[in-house]
Structures are given as C-alpha cells and as structure tokens.
Image 1: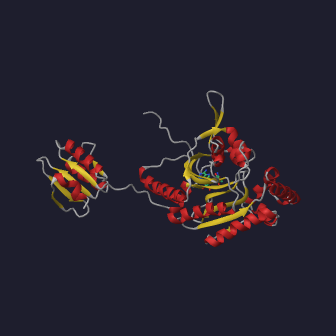
Image 2: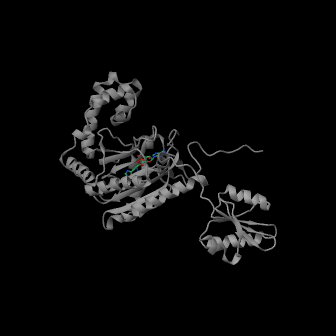
Image 3: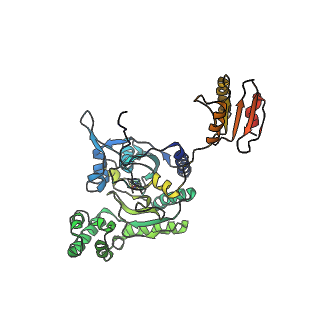
Length: 410
Ligand code: HAM
C-alpha cells in the first residue's frame, strides 16, 4: 500500500453531514444582505502580493508572517488572499465603481488563507462572509453595517453574542496617539516582559491585546485613544453610537480594541461570542477611509466587516446531520432499471430519492434504506407489483406504480 496523504495542517474537509448547517448560514447571509441592497461580488483567491502589503499594512502580523505567498512561472509575486477588503477596493478602482451612485454596497463569501498556528476556531484556510459599503462617510453607513451583522447573528440564533465598539480616529490622531503611547510604554519599560519590549517599539498598540499579567497591568493605566479623538472624529463616533442606541443594538465601548489590520480609521468593532474559547471573535470590521486612495483610486471613505463562517458554526454548535431521503426505491433483481427510472421520476417531482447502487439483496436494500433514514421505501417486486413501506411504522401496502409520485407527496 502507498503512504497515505493527509490534508495540510490547519485545513479541513466539509463533509456532507456538515454541509446543511453551512448552507443555512449562506442562505441566511444572502437573505439579510440582499434585502439591504448589497450585491454579491466574487474576487480571485489570489492577488498580487503588493496589494496586501500596501493594503493591509507592512508591519501587521498578517503581512509579516501569515501570508501564503509564491512566485508564479512568470516570476510574478502572488499571495493567497488573507482577507477581502483590499481585493474589493482593488476591484472598486479597477472597474471604475466610483462613477456609480455611491455608496457601492457589496457582499462576499469565500475562502481565505492565513498561515496561523491552528487551534479551535483558527485555521489556515477558512471561510469569511463580509460586506463593504464604499463611497460614504456617513455614520449611518457604519450603523447599518453593524446592525446587519447583528441581525444575521440573531437570525441564526448564535448564543452569547456581544459587540465591542471603538474608534481609532483619523490617521493623524492615531499617529499622535501612537507616539504618546510609545512614550508611556518606554516610561514603564522595566515593568514589561523583556521579550515584548521590541514588539511594542514597533507597534505599541499591540500592547492592548497582550495576555500576560505584567503588560496588562501597565496597559490598564495607559492613555486611551478614545479620549484623544479630535472634534470631527468624536462627532462621527457619537453619531454612530446614537444610531445604535436608537436601533436598540447594545454595545460595550472598548478603547482597547485594536484590529489586526492597518487600514482602519474612526469606527472599529468586533462581535464576540462567550461560547467560543480563545478565538472568540465571530466577526469584525470598521471604517477604512484611506484605503481606496492608497490603492490608486480617488479619495473614498468606506466601511465594512467580515465574519468567520467556521466560528459562527462553532458557536451554534450544531450536530452534523445529513438530510434523510424522502424515499428509497428498492428493487428485486431484474427490476433495477425500473428502480432507476422511478427514482429519476420522483426526483423530477422534487423528492429526494435514492436507490441501491451496490448490488445488495432486497433484504440488504431495506437495511440500507433504514440506515439512510428514508421516510418511505418503494419496493419493486420481481412479479411487476410494487409495495409502499412506511419506514418508521413498518406499515406496508400495495401501490399503483403510475401514481407513486402523487401518493408520496400526500
Ligand atoms: P479580521 O478580523 O481579520 O477582519 O477577520 C474577520 C473574521 O474572520 C474574524 O473575526 C474571524 O471570525 C475570522 N477569521 C480570521 N482569521 C481566521 C482564521 N485563521 N481561522 C478562522 N477564522 C478566522 C478582516 O479580515 C477584515 N477584512 C474585515 C473588514 C471588512 N474590515 C473592513 N471590511
């Protein structure tokens, strides 16, 4: 026997029993987002590496260590997309969408790739669904985006959901704040773990997601960006909060919310679930007013989010279950062609119909029908007659073959 080949670390197969829960999630997302006027967009699974380097940020974890990058046969530097926002901004510019009525409202669903350490809820290939509203600065757009994710999670019945909300202000405010925080961390250098000091020198905001006690103690007293927002940023944030209040969406103000991507300005948010362990973020996003311009387009304020499909499914905790057949067509030898024709006819009538494809005896076929959870079995006897069996009760009666579809749909 040859050596077995396994799926790469951090990837997974979606087996048939797991696919109905996924399909329900997809349908719910499509429903919620399309009803709000978002149109689905699909972009390639890989892009120029430059897009993410420039879009997501050179110093982020994603760009420095989590990208699956490769050179193609022509020597072009490509990367499997680690996120969707940069791609969508690229598409917005490439297709001249700034000439359309604004905002352009897009949603997406697909596979994303990050070379992270795999654990529960964290994979190297995962699915995200998300939305982006490009071409508006209005707080209404931020509020709508948040409300739509809230609505989706509610409709699905995801338990233990909380919303963390913050604002990063403008790039200038953030740059000034970064210096202030850096100075503060330097002052407290001796109280920080040695191995973290260098990291905070490069990106002081990271100190807010540190989980060691010493950093937490230092950061608890640190100046907060939320207290440093300038007039317009502060007004914008007040408006977003007020809209959420009026919509009855509860949130927790969080001045320590740092997102792992550099493009954010103003509003940032994350939906978390208490049902999840360490990887508690169901989805997150925010405003990114400078990104389109940074990618070669006109100045275009925008806001959006992405949610992790596997995280949502994990929080829902649904048991895998393949849908049962409506009817199993069992056939005596010599009747198998007729069984295939009947199954085809029943499928055309909208039923989920199966038949034996493995040469089982009639007895074996009934056992198989039971295993499949079929509600009914039609048994084609060798003498041309047919029986209808209710699999749960075992009740059985003669059946007019010309009227099977009609009888079964009763
Ligand atoms: P993100 O926070 O990096 O944001 O990812 C969004 C969601 O994707 C996370 O909350 C999580 O549920 C899921 N996710 C991320 N990484 C993994 C992983 N390795 N395994 C499983 N699930 C994962 C973004 O990607 C932004 N593009 C969101 C956005 C859209 N901001 C503005 N517009």
